[in-house]
Image (cartoon, rainbow, N blue to C red; front, side):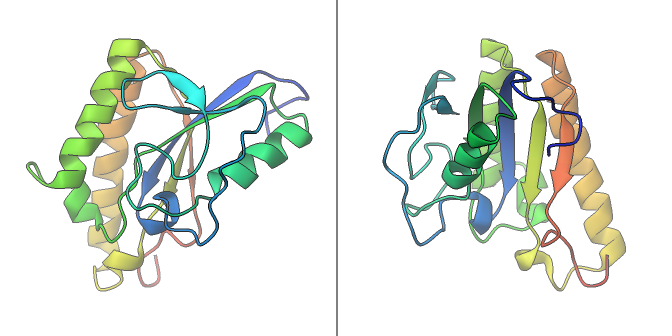
Length: 174
């Protein structure tokens, strides 16, 4: 993450996509406000961040509160804003299936992003556990399809974010 960022570089905005680790499934909830740490609310407004994050499923804690704090403490950005839209227990197929809950949620989020002209610097992708039986080639095809959909929609709002794919986000030997 620090690669390409200079001290006090800018306001960093991160879209988070995936399953449980991205979706309020942590054991500890961080509810104390952190100055300059924000999340995007359900209407597309930037509001102070706290667990559980608004777009993500589940009611636990996130990785995003401590990560945001560390980014700010390291002076890698003046402010950090997260928009985690993850849903625990989902597979890539769920994200791509029209009519599924998570597919609809993804498109609602992307519509709000475009309406509010929210620009993202990064997309963090944390997914894979629900796809352990998916053949690697099929998983890769699904991932690239999802990437194409999300990246294409984000470009409409002026974003061309870098993607960071968690090492956990893999299937079998992919």
